[in-house]
Length: 418
Image (spheres, rainbow, N blue to C red):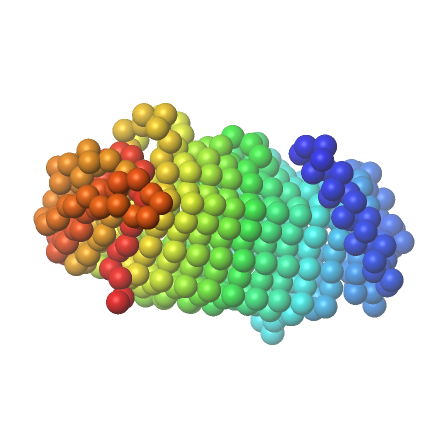
């Protein structure tokens, strides 16, 4: 963390705490923050107090039991307050660093601000798939919450997802840093499950190489909810989500949209920058038939990415699910990227109507040479204030595959609704 950012976060913490006339500190309830004592009981007493606002000063707080936030509660942690899961504390499906109290009946108006939330995955492994009581490995977990705010914090070394959200409405997750020096499989950044809507995910940043070790942002309407890391989640629609600002040096995948029958719709994705080892935008079919999926009205703008790591055949943009009305603009693949992976692959067992604006004439030949079962019509045209562009309209049947091997994409429209 830079000095300017650290100073501003400390100032924000002090200002927020001062501005809360009914705030209490966890130290008033016996928390010591010495990195040895289990401070979870004292912090929970503070959270259960009548005060709507609880603060955590700088220090290292060992968390031996899940912290529970009720409706109408705000927890402010100092930016240098470390909340570290105690060794062996992650035992079953109910164990997280923090969650809301009432998953069944729901909660409302919860805020979690600040702190370094350390899952201590070196000493807290998730359970086994097939065990309905298995520990999920999730660090921060919120289920069935309306008006949720998570911001200005760091998540360190979860065993699976850093932040997991399900059945959340009207939520904001912003200014989040992921610090994963100890890599684990399925280490998503922000993982959003079914029945989630009206949310903003903004300014998400990876601090360490190969972080995150799976999807930085996952909008998964049709998860395998029987797997241990998804226990407590529900399949259902995901709607009206904005993703704005995702930065990583060598992430596995930047953004994933997953659907079998449940809709993922009205999604805006902007400002993705950095390197990915697998995908920039992933709409692959995972365990589903390629004829599945209900992804609609997705806008992607201003992407600047390279393929990080060794050569592989995973395209930067992959579409193997049913998608209607996808628009991608200003997708820039750095010219220094010599990785042989394709820029775009569409192979979803559906009829496809694709319009592309490409920077070079060579890319038109690229599309024609590497697509199969497709008909293309290419023209050159000039947009006001922009250099001459190459335009190609491609139609492909259900067996057709559209593939662009290299380069950037200025504009892409897939299966417009009008």
